[in-house]
Length: 396
Image (tube, rainbow, N blue to C red; front, top):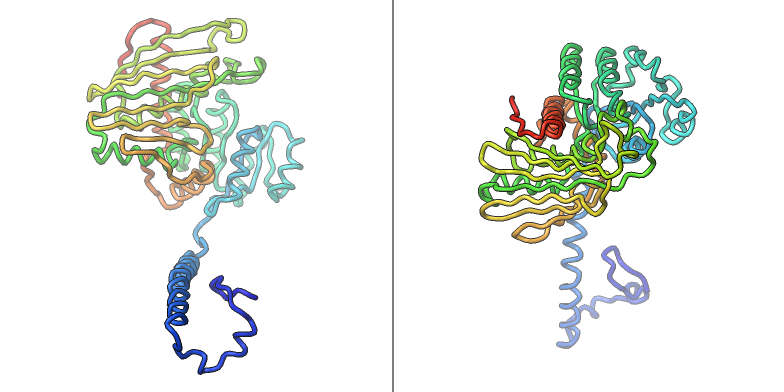
């Protein structure tokens, strides 16, 4: 017994012994058997042909490849690097680290030549390296501003992890430096390319949810090692708000589809030893929007089981939980579950950023420096509202 190209059982000897007379329909039974066989084979053949046609139509990408050097070789940089192995429009070609002992393993894994390895003192030399188009800065928040400016001055495009800087002033300086150097400044907003997130944005834009009334964003986790940079005010610029809280800030904007005009906020601190002065443990904040919609959000380093977005409109609702994790993102709306396919966020992000840099593609939700600056202005206002206990008006 063997299988033909369509997976149908065929008796090998019978194939050799076939005579023309055997094809005559000498009984109703034989006729029905052959009819059944044809009915089975037809959809299989159709499916096979469709798949072949699809494979033929998918031509290999021949466009320009964004050649990226990653700065800062920590855990998230490792995640990005591994995700980039699946990219078609971006490639990891260089590394920049304050710990040169990491070079060997990264070079071996990603086939990075010695000439594309730099430390924090000498990476300005990338200006003379035509193999690198952009640098992805994945270092502590407090280093972003200076590193981004140096990368821009070296003539390379800047991709910076969020938050873009420690405050709006730093963000403005980064934007100015990149404009002066005629390079692009992008921020690592991976959720701006996530399928289920984009589906909710589509529903909101097309009026399927009606007028938006309310958004809730819950972001947080129990943080561990008290000596890590995220709990160092100089390196982090704050606490939970500068790490996980920015997801709720940013999410409120792209979910509601407006820019907030006021903010109120309250801080709770249960462990002042771990969360020292200037390092927030938990902040609740509220945003008001021009349409009258409001947002109620939570940013914390002391609770798990959060990571939830909820958007409510006059005609329907949308919910994501988890909403900003590494995936798969899961959700539902008043019309049913959201089950769009999961693709590694950083893979999609880097391919999309290649198109933004080389083809001036305009994404559904911006990922440029101006987008990062808007979040920093809101975070500045949240901290001010915590300090004063007053509502803070947001200006353009």
